[in-house]
Length: 139
Image (cartoon, rainbow, N blue to C red; front, top):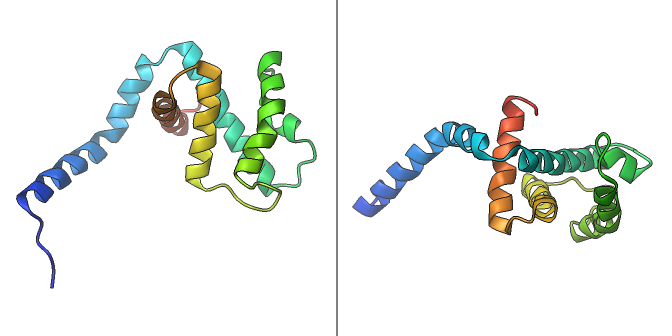
Protein backbone atom coordinates (compact mmCIF):
# COMPACT_ATOMS: atom_id res chain seq x y z
CA UNK A 1 0.00 0.00 0.00
CA UNK A 2 1.65 3.22 -1.11
CA UNK A 3 1.05 6.52 0.54
CA UNK A 4 0.17 9.39 -1.74
CA UNK A 5 1.69 12.75 -0.91
CA UNK A 6 -0.49 15.54 0.35
CA UNK A 7 -0.69 18.73 -1.70
CA UNK A 8 1.80 20.29 0.72
CA UNK A 9 4.12 17.31 0.34
CA UNK A 10 3.90 17.61 -3.46
CA UNK A 11 4.74 21.32 -3.31
CA UNK A 12 7.71 20.72 -1.00
CA UNK A 13 8.98 17.87 -3.18
CA UNK A 14 8.69 20.10 -6.24
CA UNK A 15 10.56 22.97 -4.57
CA UNK A 16 13.32 20.69 -3.27
CA UNK A 17 13.62 19.00 -6.65
CA UNK A 18 13.97 22.37 -8.37
CA UNK A 19 16.58 23.50 -5.83
CA UNK A 20 18.56 20.27 -6.29
CA UNK A 21 18.53 20.65 -10.07
CA UNK A 22 19.71 24.28 -9.81
CA UNK A 23 22.43 23.58 -7.21
CA UNK A 24 25.40 23.65 -9.66
CA UNK A 25 24.26 27.03 -11.06
CA UNK A 26 23.67 28.33 -7.53
CA UNK A 27 27.16 27.27 -6.44
CA UNK A 28 28.80 28.81 -9.52
CA UNK A 29 27.00 32.12 -9.01
CA UNK A 30 27.72 32.18 -5.29
CA UNK A 31 31.39 31.36 -5.88
CA UNK A 32 31.85 34.51 -7.97
CA UNK A 33 30.63 36.61 -5.02
CA UNK A 34 33.11 35.23 -2.48
CA UNK A 35 36.04 37.63 -1.92
CA UNK A 36 39.38 36.26 -3.16
CA UNK A 37 40.95 36.39 0.32
CA UNK A 38 38.11 34.23 1.70
CA UNK A 39 38.33 31.82 -1.27
CA UNK A 40 42.04 31.43 -0.54
CA UNK A 41 41.45 30.66 3.16
CA UNK A 42 38.54 28.29 2.49
CA UNK A 43 40.55 26.54 -0.23
CA UNK A 44 43.29 26.08 2.35
CA UNK A 45 40.78 24.53 4.79
CA UNK A 46 39.50 22.14 2.11
CA UNK A 47 43.07 21.19 1.12
CA UNK A 48 43.98 20.59 4.77
CA UNK A 49 41.05 18.20 5.17
CA UNK A 50 41.91 16.45 1.91
CA UNK A 51 45.46 16.05 3.18
CA UNK A 52 44.23 14.79 6.57
CA UNK A 53 42.21 12.17 4.68
CA UNK A 54 45.28 11.26 2.61
CA UNK A 55 47.36 11.08 5.79
CA UNK A 56 44.88 8.74 7.44
CA UNK A 57 45.00 6.45 4.42
CA UNK A 58 48.81 6.47 4.17
CA UNK A 59 51.74 5.76 6.48
CA UNK A 60 52.86 9.41 6.44
CA UNK A 61 55.32 10.15 9.23
CA UNK A 62 55.01 13.87 9.85
CA UNK A 63 51.41 15.07 10.22
CA UNK A 64 52.14 18.78 10.11
CA UNK A 65 54.32 18.52 7.01
CA UNK A 66 51.78 16.40 5.16
CA UNK A 67 48.77 18.49 6.20
CA UNK A 68 49.94 22.03 5.40
CA UNK A 69 50.00 22.59 1.62
CA UNK A 70 52.67 24.89 0.22
CA UNK A 71 54.07 27.90 2.05
CA UNK A 72 51.49 29.01 4.57
CA UNK A 73 51.67 31.91 6.97
CA UNK A 74 53.50 31.03 10.20
CA UNK A 75 50.52 32.08 12.33
CA UNK A 76 48.35 29.49 10.56
CA UNK A 77 51.02 26.83 11.12
CA UNK A 78 51.18 27.70 14.82
CA UNK A 79 47.39 27.58 15.07
CA UNK A 80 47.24 24.24 13.22
CA UNK A 81 49.90 22.72 15.46
CA UNK A 82 47.78 23.71 18.44
CA UNK A 83 44.37 22.77 17.00
CA UNK A 84 45.01 19.69 14.82
CA UNK A 85 45.61 17.32 17.75
CA UNK A 86 42.30 18.49 19.25
CA UNK A 87 40.50 17.98 15.92
CA UNK A 88 42.04 14.54 15.45
CA UNK A 89 41.09 13.55 18.99
CA UNK A 90 37.55 14.92 18.55
CA UNK A 91 37.02 12.75 15.48
CA UNK A 92 38.84 9.77 17.01
CA UNK A 93 41.43 9.79 14.21
CA UNK A 94 44.05 7.76 15.93
CA UNK A 95 45.61 6.25 12.84
CA UNK A 96 43.16 3.72 11.47
CA UNK A 97 39.76 5.22 10.95
CA UNK A 98 38.57 6.96 7.81
CA UNK A 99 36.82 10.32 7.71
CA UNK A 100 33.20 10.33 6.60
CA UNK A 101 32.13 13.10 4.22
CA UNK A 102 30.25 14.72 7.12
CA UNK A 103 33.36 14.69 9.32
CA UNK A 104 35.46 16.10 6.48
CA UNK A 105 32.97 18.92 5.93
CA UNK A 106 32.74 19.64 9.64
CA UNK A 107 36.51 19.85 10.03
CA UNK A 108 36.86 22.09 6.96
CA UNK A 109 34.02 24.28 8.27
CA UNK A 110 35.70 24.64 11.66
CA UNK A 111 39.03 25.53 10.04
CA UNK A 112 37.28 28.00 7.70
CA UNK A 113 35.52 29.58 10.67
CA UNK A 114 38.81 30.00 12.51
CA UNK A 115 40.69 31.39 9.48
CA UNK A 116 37.99 33.79 8.27
CA UNK A 117 36.02 34.80 11.37
CA UNK A 118 32.75 33.88 9.63
CA UNK A 119 29.90 32.34 11.62
CA UNK A 120 29.61 28.54 11.60
CA UNK A 121 26.69 28.65 9.14
CA UNK A 122 28.49 31.04 6.81
CA UNK A 123 31.63 28.90 7.06
CA UNK A 124 29.68 25.73 6.28
CA UNK A 125 28.05 27.18 3.17
CA UNK A 126 31.22 28.90 1.99
CA UNK A 127 33.23 25.70 2.50
CA UNK A 128 30.68 23.73 0.47
CA UNK A 129 30.63 26.31 -2.34
CA UNK A 130 34.43 26.42 -2.56
CA UNK A 131 34.68 22.61 -2.37
CA UNK A 132 32.15 22.18 -5.19
CA UNK A 133 33.98 24.79 -7.26
CA UNK A 134 37.33 23.10 -6.60
CA UNK A 135 35.87 19.81 -7.87
CA UNK A 136 34.89 21.53 -11.12
CA UNK A 137 38.11 23.47 -11.61
CA UNK A 138 40.83 23.38 -8.96
CA UNK A 139 41.76 26.79 -7.55
